[in-house]
Length: 288
Length: 337
Image (tube, rainbow over all chains, first blue to last red; front, top):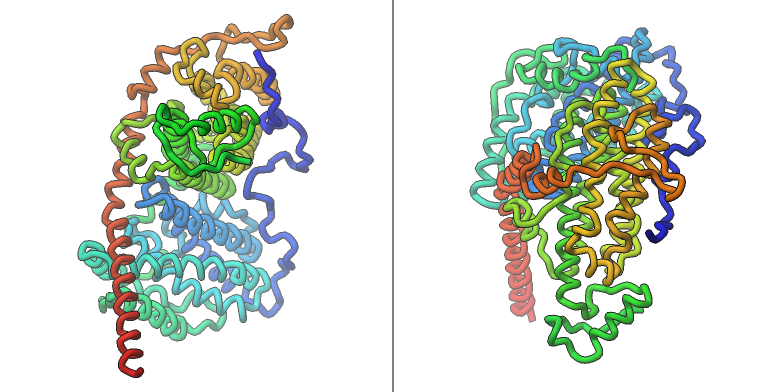
């Protein structure tokens, strides 16, 4: 047998990598995602308002990431597989930062996993648009376009004026990510709107499906002096521009009663959470 | 550095000198590049191997991808999501490497979903608990690394370069798997049982990843001569066992092989014989998950057809619009002149 002498990572698997807590793994160079940022809540900030804001934005992100994870191995092409996973990972990262902040300011001291895994549907504060099933690629793209336009408008304002330094930092990091999400969704909306009769028909159907959930985005929360009317104006202006290039129109629709932000959800949220929480809840004493 | 004649030829009819140049490049351990002349058998073997490898990355997303939505902490969710995304990336590099040999990604995908090209048999086993995510990282990615590190020096340039990048990422994958298992072994009894159960199920299929025994490996001789392949299946399998046993001990799990023991004389571990009949069954389509893996890949491909058609139609319309705009401009310029 000849000697196999290739330099081999496998050999060093059990070697000491110098990690303090031996919980090293790829992509997770932080146990505390807010390390280095002054986490003291400024005296002028209403802690309850801050916690509610972080929780709402965190829930939108987690539920959105979960829906994107459901696309995994189902995308129409490998490039889209990669892009959807990228966007899902960005949103997951945003959720983790926002949940950590919530736990610091709402007085409970809970960690990110407590918010994700040990709350029931009625305690989630995401908008209902985020929780709707993926539908076809046209629906997922349309939903992503709307949510990323809205979230970018909100994050830009928070990055500029949020009175909490942590939320401000999270928003500043998120702005670059969301600009890419919006670009990706807009490019596809134009391709699909302009492409074939079939893709155009699917985009019209997707827009009709999304329209009743738009008003909810522009309700008062998240707060901090962000004017919902301004966010609405900016979001709809960008949407109109994209849809115009796609040869599509934003249909009018009657808003559905209720608010996800108040804990009113569609029948789709509970099963989504049941799947997300299944292993964690089956082993509440476990460490992962 | 490389033989530079661009000619492609069908083996026997090679212009004099080309075969000699190819052989000399291989003998000198230099790289064959896409525009170099190469024997058709070499090209065919490479396309088959690279495509099979690409398919394995793409199908390999499924068993672990199942657990992204159920990962029990947000940190594990992020790690697993990123890992499965890496595998899509590996598939892309490899399909691109195959395209440098004249293959076409869409055609290779068709061959996969029609069952005309194979992928690694390991992905036809189910992932039953979250511990499987850790064991796949440790054993399956570990075995893949043993197979793939030598491919970083394989004779075909684009394949070798793709493998350098892939191996770097695979080593992260393996570490995250082992680290998950270490964490689980420090957890509850139920977690330790999950880990042992997963090791019991994945150990033998992992050994099969090195392919059939050398005396029963039909494609090996030519691949070794062409330096596509650099070590025999049995050599790599032995290497894997030797490295894995101390890791299992450190982890505190038992490898399910009563014949496993250190052989002082050989300086290697002796181990039992994998069930090669099972290997053949799984390879030829009768594993526990073959049908569901291909069905998922086929469904994604077919349900995405209208999207790909729309993208092509939009690109064609854009090109036509750009063309008309140029015509209008030159007409205006002509009128102005």
